[in-house]
Image (cartoon, rainbow, N blue to C red; front, side, top):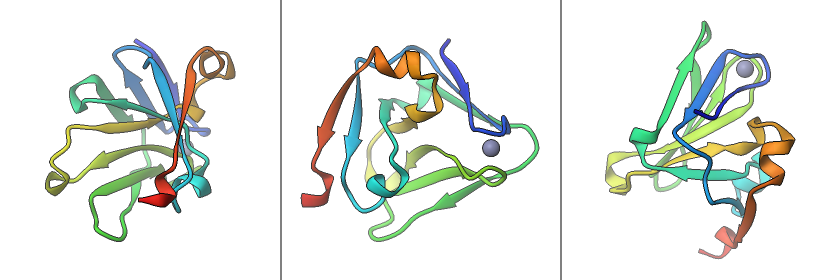
Amino acid sequence: MPTTYCHCGNVQVKVDALPDTLTSCNCSICRRTAALWGYYPQAQVSVSVKTEPLQTYCWGDEYIDFHRCSQCGCTTHYTCRPKAEMDRVGVNFRLFDNEVVQRLAVKTVDGASF
Ligand SMILES: [Zn+2]
């Protein structure tokens, strides 16, 4: 299973398989974190922490929780709150090796416009 870590190694993210595409979004948060998102149903992602807890950020309509390592600050993934009614986890593929990311097509989404 494709597995990666935040910079300090505290957070491990494991996915069932590599996604077909990654998403680059220009909305107010994605452009700041510069994440490249791979989308999965919740059952296909497993996240674990070694010692330090995750920190979570949520704003606006509060549909999505963005999670980051509290030690090194890397944005690792996002999860949808129940009211979003969407079974989706966004995994930040910037955490994976360059060789992995380079093989995947990147889809650009104009999230700033909606
Ligand atoms: Zn870390």
